[in-house]
Image (cartoon, rainbow, N blue to C red):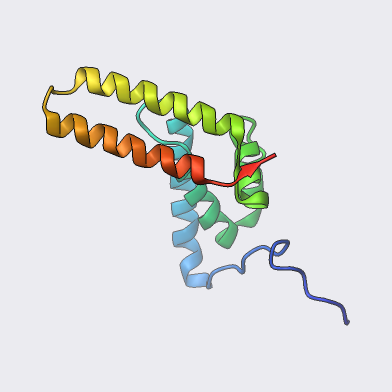
Length: 138
């Protein structure tokens, strides 16, 4: 059979070697669980865990990765990332609002130490810069 190979954007990454597959599946399922917990717990991040889960599952159990991408709560965001390597503008605004709200609550509850307040707001600033530098999906 002849024909052009699939483009790198359309092809799924190759599966890992069989001896790594079990480890990747365990990590993928663990990160899905942490991502789901993060959707409901205020200080647990959701997105990094789901991106890690997608990374591990795509390379070990693609069918489960596709099922995770169909979960109504966050499947659309994972598909945006996998297909376009970006996030929607409303997601950036939501992330900013949640980040600032959480930081304000943390700053109010934390010690009044200048060092801890500076560290908190420095990390918030870094996080917001990262979020807003991500490509925007239209």
